[in-house]
Length: 393
Image 1 (tube, rainbow, N blue to C red):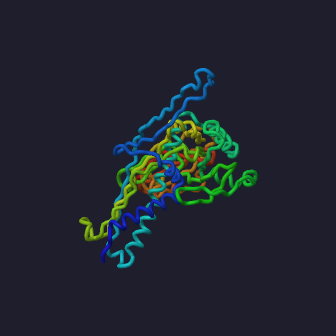
Image 2: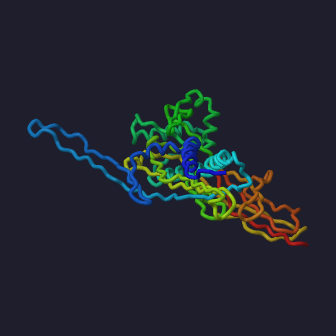
Image 3: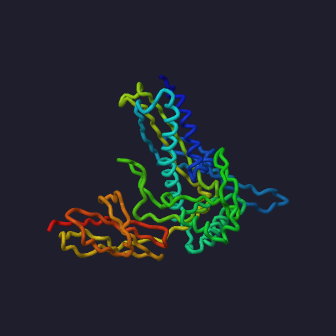
């Protein structure tokens, strides 16, 4: 069997780019990167144009001369991410290589690449809004009022003829759906994303893009070891809503490339090998820095973490507790897990207070517990894991 690796790589890359555009909540920002210029391995030039205002016309000297300032601002790309995937020769048949490979790579982009890119883009935009104090304090029981406040703030800066988008956390989107007031003014509109036209809901002409809460945090760690991927920072806040002009940010993908190797070309294994790499970042021009506004969750401050405990089988007493505070309303849920990394976490029924009594029925062994603290039934953070060591009687 022969396979044209170059032809398939190009074909897969084009198809995967389409998958990215279809599935990504922020993929439409790629449409705004047409006037960028690459000048180095990590540098992008984005032009920013500024004009002087009108002046009086003088009947003797005529027009007042005004300057046009074109600032070619350089931005550094930070996200260079990649992964090599292999499919054993025996898992493929003569006619199934292209079909199975396309499915696997498409699923990889959908489940791994798109969530990471969305999380990075939204966290960076929310961080920009926070840095410039472009934040509002909303009421979680009145999401429509909060959305209107964000829209008004953006329109003060961008004007009233700009097409706006609102990224909405899944919990807030559910509140929208359950509101009879909002349902009467919510429309279905066409939303252009690349060469794809999507149907989205809109309020007052602003496209509403729901985003799962895992992608709506203010900060992440983008892992470089083990299973890779990304995890929210411990002190990350939830992004309840983020509003900006549709052309307010530039998602620049310098590379999204697939290299395909047949088992004959793969020197490491008797397998088809697919090398995927994406090199990207999101930038906001200086003229648009104040057109991005956000509503973030209240901060949850943990002043006392649950402490490790050592007890004796048959004579167990004591409890685990956490002390936390926030401007919102806090609730608690305790979990048990199998290690300090919170693997295989299982919710403990009825363990919904700030303290948890150590079960008196535990047998000789080591047990792990942590609490999830939630503010306003939306945003949450986990405590450290407490280890309970049970010694034999």
